[in-house]
Image 1 (cartoon, rainbow, N blue to C red):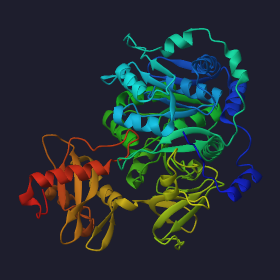
Image 2: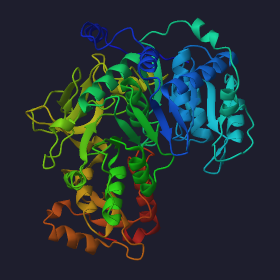
Image 3: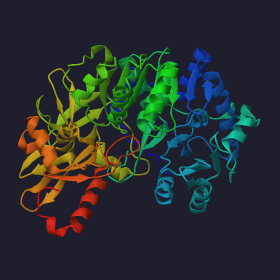
Image 4: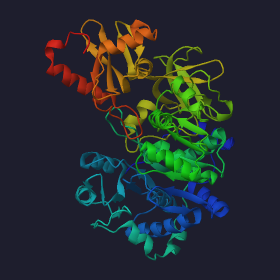
Length: 556
């Protein structure tokens, strides 16, 4: 399969001249960390597994040797559908050792999605559970092998709490066997410009593309991230986000490895267990979407609990409401927003040492080496303080979507600028405030309204536990404001009157009031916490279709 990269040659020369890029690979960084911090714990999960850097180094040696034995070669793609288990990290390091392209995937992908991705990235080896969440992965693997005969190895990962029979070799048996690791020294050198990982985009629009990130991309990004955040070998990270996403993979697995720090994993985010795990492992920082910190703070408040060692929570994926920053501060947690995407992994952030509880909403300023532009629809720079699309360029920016040059050219121009599709404002100090996606704008009677800003007001209503605001087609105004809400009490659905009464009392301008309320059991999100608004739009269309006599009504 093609992994043709798109890199601006002039920028490439600058990155090498400034030392942002080098000839070092992630494997070089791994070996350096093992030598320096070998006896320290690297990964701990809530299933009872613990690995020091030395122990994981030995385990990954055996797995890497097995992959070579099956026919996996440097530059081949290894796909893995593994939950938030420590085995995920073993597989990742094994990929580094043979120069394979890591392709971590959501365990929710089934035959159709999985087959499309395998075709796109040219999967040669596939890791999957035996069973997980009721899915028989043996059967799924058999389907994939029939559809993709180029697959030369399938390895199943057993949950240590089950003894289910597997249809393929299991990771446990491979790691317990002796393999000739001498073959690893014969693997040809992998360049720092080689693709290290192909990560699927979040899929909030219902489509999947695999963004290619090189060793240089990831080393630069995570070293700069650690420097800006202040991560050291003494830090312990709690990672609640899925590891197949850029947040978990880059800022969880890789950034801790580069710093010699410790990574604590929870297989499924359950807030009570998460608080206990953080306290038990003395975690010092964490990262994820606002969903995680919202649930944690709500639990602490309801149960009068504390997390005395957790000093920092980095939030990405959506703008962080100011009220949430203040609530976190009451527990000694610096809630700092960061901003980026799979294609341009978080490149702006609030520095923890510059944080204060009353600071205005902001995603901070760029890390050193990353350029930001805010442009109008014609690609012309706008003045500070004005809204525009955010473009970024730097050593962190991805080198294209794997085997999809047309999609690459739509967002990555010839000068190296990544066109994010996000509406942002930059202030005179260089700080970025994220307004939302271009597609998140509701155009009501010719007036542009940002759905995320509208939703912040809805979330403050005590009758609302969760919500998402979308545009509702209207023959007269073009669009009206529709709020999907999860009521705080299942016995008390939220009505439009209840919500508008609250917004009126809160002095929210009337133009920002929802004009329809739809109660729903759960807001559909990606596993990284982003709202799948395309599914809400489909659901609204279905409900309007079932109630055609109410199509022209406002309210619910």
